[in-house]
Image (cartoon, rainbow, N blue to C red; front, side, top):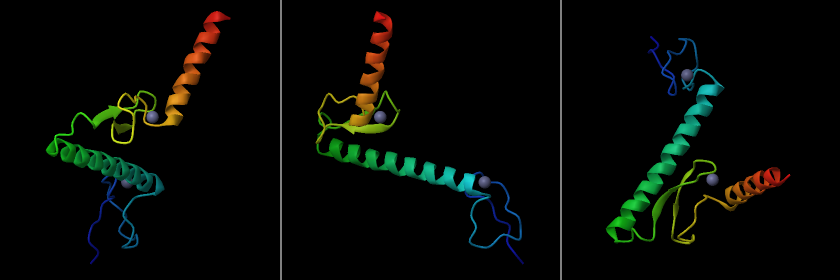
Length: 108
Ligand SMILES: [Zn+2]
Ligand SMILES: [Zn+2]
């Protein structure tokens, strides 16, 4: 007898005749799960790094940083400049471009 299985992403009950390897209702659920997992891994990695830094009394070097452009959680310090605000150069230049565009509109 087949055991009742549930989607690992949204928790919906899977049809009884799906293959045993199938874990999600559909690709949407699978993609969602993948994204959640990646995010969780990332936050976990950062948390561990922070714990490490704290252990070594390095809190001045590493601090959590939420990129105001894309909302990515990252950290400043280490090989980054301490006053870094954006998670990447791409976000920095995107924010910069938007600022300049706004200024240009104001002056027009
Ligand atoms: Zn699902
Ligand atoms: Zn960013």
